[in-house]
Length: 415
Image (cartoon, rainbow, N blue to C red; front, side, top):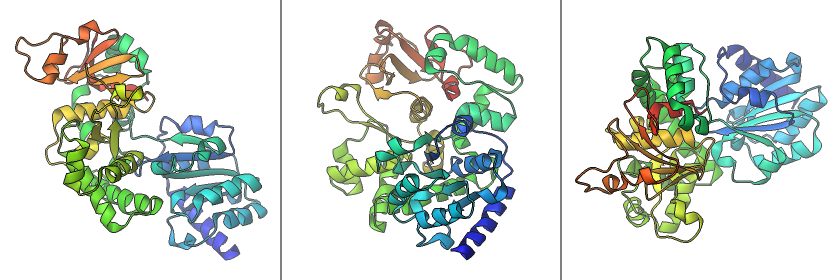
C-alpha cells in the first residue's frame, strides 16, 4: 500500500500542477464554503467535475502532503479497496482526499459509507449523475452538489471574458426588459443573438474551449463513454442493451417531443414498454435525455404521453443532422430552467414552471392572439394563454421583450 500511495501522490501532484483553468463555475463557492466533511459532486461527463475538484484542492489551506487526488478509472486502482486506501492515507497524515469517477470503484457505495462512519478525514467525491438516485442515503450522509451543463451566461463569461449576473426565474419574468437591456449594455458590440445561436451548437460543455477543432468528436466520445462505461457499470448493462440505448437516443433525436408514444417507441427500439421506461430513466439520470411529464399526472393516472428530448441543444446538433428549430428552443428552455425549478408540460402552452408560470415557446412572431385560421394544436392554444394568470410567450430571435413576451436567450441567465 505504501508504494501505491507514493505513486498516487506523484500522479496527484502532476494533475494539480497541470490544471490551469481559473474560471469558477456557479456552484464553486457554495461547495467551498460548505461545512460538510463529505461532499459529492455529480453531473454528466464533460461538465467540469474534475476541474472543480482541482480548483478546490488548490484553494484549500492544507500542506501538499496532506492532500491527495485519485481517479477511480485509473488502472492503478483496479481492485483496490477505497476504504483501505483512505485509511492508510489518513494514518500517514492525510487530511483531505478527492476521489474522482467514484462509480468506477468496486462497491463504491459501501466503501464511501465506511469511510464516513470510521475515518476522520475530509472527503470530496465526484461521479456520474446516475449515481445520485441509486442510494437515497447519499442525500442524508453527504452534501450533494449537482453540476449542470454550462448556462448561456457562463458560456458568455468564458467566451467573451466578461462578468455577468444571474437571476431567479421570478425576477426574469417580472423584470425581463430591464435585465435584457442591462446585459446588452454590458456586452456592447457583441451581438446577443449571434452568441446565442453559437451556444446552442457548442456551448453546453466547457471542454469546447480547450479543443474547439475536435469538439464534436470529443462530445461523441463522451456520449459513448457515458453509455458503455458509466451506465454499463452502474446498471450492469450488456453491450446489446447499450446498443438499444443508442437507438433510443437516435429515435428521440429525430422526432418531435410528443410525436412518439411509448408503444411506437418500444416497437421502434425493440423492447417491451416496461423495459423502455427503465431505459428512459437511465438516460434521464445520466443527463443524456430529458423526460418531462404531463402536469395532470401528478394528481391522477392519465393516458398522456411524456415529452422526451435530448438533454440539451448541443447534443441535438452533435447527434442529429438537421435538428428541428422548435425542439431546440424547448430543449434549451428546459435545460436551463430545470436546474432550479420544477417543470411539467401542459395542455395550454408548452410548460408549467414551479407550478405557477405557464410558458409558450416559439419564434419572434409568436404572440398571444390565435391566428384567424387555427389548424394546428399549437395555433388553437394561442389565444387561450391570455386568459391564464402568469402566462408568458417566450420568443426566439428577439433581443428585448415587452410585457408578457420574453426573449428566449434570457433564460440562459438563471444560473
